[in-house]
Image 1 (cartoon, helix red, strand yellow):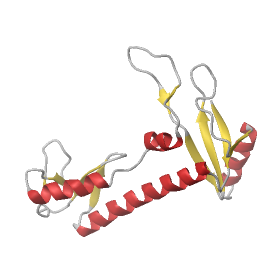
Image 2 (spheres, helix red, strand yellow):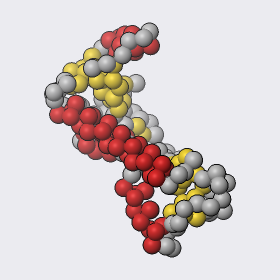
Image 3 (cartoon, one colour):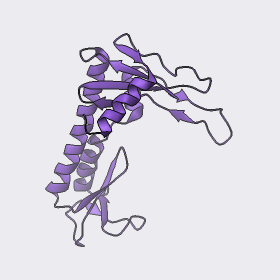
Image 4 (cartoon, one colour):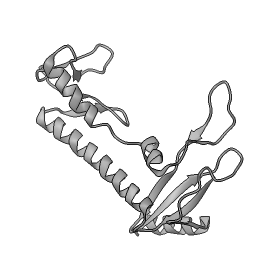
Length: 175
């Protein structure tokens, strides 16, 4: 279960969200640029990190090598070479900010949504969704069904029905 909050467009929370979106966009753009620069046919990446590039030909540029554990055509920076180390440094600078970074900027803690067990603890993070110019902060409830985090005063709580009305309007062709 989640609580929903409309974010004031000129408040500090909106500024954090804009900064987060811009940082993700910059990471995507940098990844596309390096792919193009090296003439790669694709990227090999996790959610946060760029791990390698895909080359359909068998002669990748200097500084790359293929690891047996990787799928065919995937080449990673070769840290044994000066060129490979420089490429890896560039890859590292393209780290994609995710939920943890977003929540840290908000000042929100990890939200535990279930009982701690030997297998681990279910966790979740605060997120957001945009509906045109309206930004809605989505705050999960913790395992005690209490808000997992209390947003700052520039966020106005809304009813779940209002949130779902926005979603429905978006699906019907709205923003």
